[in-house]
Image 1 (cartoon, helix red, strand yellow):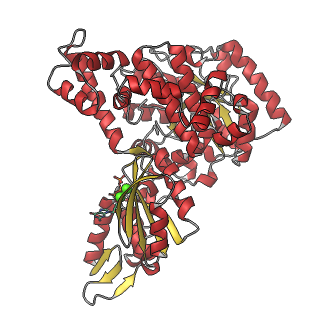
Image 2 (cartoon, helix red, strand yellow; image 1 turned 60 degrees about the vertical axis):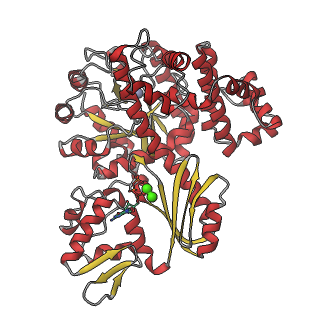
Image 3 (cartoon, rainbow, N blue to C red; image 1 turned 180 degrees about the vertical axis):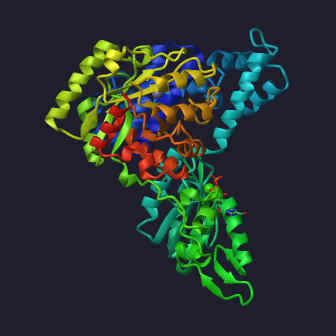
Length: 567
Ligand code: DGT
Ligand code: CA
Ligand code: CA
Ligand code: ZN
């Protein structure tokens, strides 16, 4: 599927170039859409090319199809090569800087000669950007903030991206290693990941050889007897191969977090023990007391086993000592997805396809939550179309083609807190998510509290509105929101999309402590995004949530009883 990724990147880049040049929005969007479709395609694009069935992919038209053919026949897309000759490609990544539009970028390029990230940093800092016509200090301040967010994203990756890279590495090395596991922040399911850490046992030479020769590796950064580091997909992956007897202590050590490990070492010291990646040792005699299994490391400190997601030194060590660790929610306990878009608004999957995919994932239910009418660019549904969709869903449910589809909507919350659809239709629905998609600079506290007070709203979608590496939360007094949600019996979402993960784990933990129920939803717009529920489970676990805290663990009937209770 490597070709899918490469092609998606090329089409995305063509869209960037066109955007920079001020081309038509329709053409730009056509390339963006093609990139998205190809990236999410569950099949190998090269295979579809060979079977001559590119044109049957939904969302791929004649023009794009012929460019894909060109790619496989000539090794490149001509249009892309032309554009690259015209404008430096390094400049194009700057289109991802929040608050920096293509027009400003072009101005900076043409008048100040900005060609890359370094140049941009410089003209922001030395005031020459602010001096340009139509710019001014306020606008540049916004760009400076955007640059900060952008730089954070350059250094770290999204959890969802890291998981996909990690799975490739594990899949590739699995047959060679006797044991293999992810470690570091990825194993802890942190929302962003700096580099990937992989730990293995088995034949050192062979494993390291295979690791540096993986087909996705673009650079070998370091290579030794027991460890190696490579770059793949522009990201660093570290591998360590340890002895079988050290597996547990090494896995514990390299899973971190650093703060958790520091605290553990203190506890060990008090007991006359020393912990490192090679094992647990008596300080007095030097005798090795544990290290083969991770559980042993905790057991010898008289601690219950602490799941990786909790290892942040946020009270988990104390809880383990007092045997009051939470029984964390697990992926297999999730019975459904509570935020999914279909092709009735801006998704690509049809309702029946979602029901079937839900069944394939072992789900009992999926809530169909398309956008409401204010979201014109997303083809939001008005009352009449939503009514039609409800009928269509009931018909599909009656035929039992897949999992049960809950009727629902993601209704916009207007700036005054009112909802974007009549209550006559909202009261017909099984599951109503209410979300903010506009006026992000306005304080959202009252707006959300008002929505919680509506008897028709079951859940607030992506409650803070943050988008990782691109948008900070809107101004919001979360404590007041949590109180209102608890008092009205409104759930708050853990949006499981890799870009959002909203509520974040510390916030979701606070919500639980204040008596709020949480609901996981992928916000999937394609079938290929439903897997992200796993990221939501990761956030839930990091938030110390147990099954009763998470509505998705409720059987269909219980969920419906609960949602009717609010009304
Ligand atoms: P990241 O990569 O920034 O998302 O975060 P981590 O947690 O994956 O950190 P990384 O890759 O630097 O190191 C992996 C683990 O190795 C880390 O979680 C704990 C362990 N480790 C690394 N350096 C130290 C250290 O100086 N002291 C201790 N106790 N542990 C360390
Ligand atoms: Ca790491
Ligand atoms: Ca590392
Ligand atoms: Zn939304």
